[in-house]
Image (cartoon, rainbow, N blue to C red; front, side):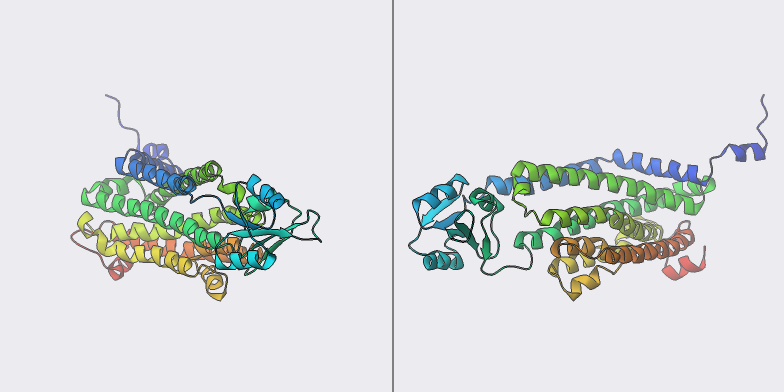
Length: 376
């Protein structure tokens, strides 16, 4: 019979803290990827995003109506796919634009190289402008601060993406923790893995899946834009700020998710049964949803949106939205907001680690924050 190796040798065979962290992270990801509810919810989100981009294009209410003065201009307008509406004078065409009877007007202009100019109320289809001629001047009677569709879509896109991802994977972390407590599996895990390493592994595993899902959703969104033809309709001046906002969203998302993930883990560690989880996760859900609704309601540039872009809990949504609506912001502002978010995330994770240690092995009911803090 072969004798057991000495304790020192067995300890030497164990992986280090980093190795244990990745073991826990891989376990969390494997469990989640086998979860039917997770797979179904991911597919539903992909279908909804694709449908939201493609279906409106399929159900569009017909071509733009454009006022013109003569048959030659009407032929140019109809070549773009718009419907030409003949009017008798510049004033009548302008009045039709103001009243909403037509979407735009293409009128003579002696100073234009093409002899035409485009008149619209707040915004104008870039397809029409390109069809008439890029050299034709465009006159907006009541120019908006930002494209109305962009002003509505940008907060919803960034906000819904961050909120749904945080809720989905945050609840997953909390449920995983409380299930391990309820089945007493956690007592076996902490015998082999330090408590803080266990927490870090859960957070890293969820973060990797969250980032991967976000990348897939973004790819579907871009594909939907291409299929619906809306990408070509975006104003050319919007593309640089949109690209910058998407680029900055990645580090803001990672730091913001880490900030919230620690809170979700503590919410799960404070209770001993799945049935009690709602009492501790409700405050965290409010922390996720309130910044989203604040950014959606404050969807125009101004002091309120600027302030939200520097608050750690709302910065992951508010700062990219500002970049889109304002056409870009000075680089020091996202750097400062990201630094504040990282500092906030580190502080929250450190506090969460202590609360997690103090509550993970406590059973028999809900642990208060004071009890968890005092008993590590």
